Image (cartoon, rainbow, N blue to C red; front, side):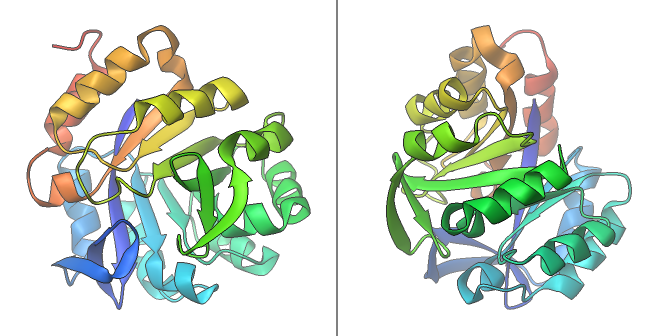
Length: 249
């Protein structure tokens, strides 16, 4: 299981939002490329990059920065989401060295597009499920689409999806702890490895996550952390060491 540092891009800076609100952002770095290098030096073995401007605009806005991050990351995989809503954009990112694409809004509003992309690039497409509890939201988390997590997963569970990033919007950036109940439900409903996201506040959350998934740890791909890392309430080295260990201590 991986501890995956989050790099959220807005106006060329590395930021964190509160519950997905673009008007409630905190700038943590004006040099996202250096931030990426920092997390790798700390022991990060994968990076989670989101083009927030792109997610709201419906098309990429930080492609240059993302390319620079991918180049700086070298052999460390970089998963990218935000504004990937055409085949051309998806293929351009993959050609630029992005390891995995996170498809959220487009997967919900155009399921045939998502199915074709997943089947043409098996093991390289991640489903981004952003929800308030179990109700999925799209378009940068501002639109509730009236579809539950369970309803959508019933359609895609047999596709060669690499992983599912489940984010509880109500907890994202709030450091209130992970929504274990729905995260486990996503695994149970899909059988697809899950990346937990939203609410990590300390190493105790990672310990609790391991305990919660004790009997199905192979189904937990990783956990994304942002604000807790930036505010130094959690370190990549300490967190990854815990996740790598065979015990929770």
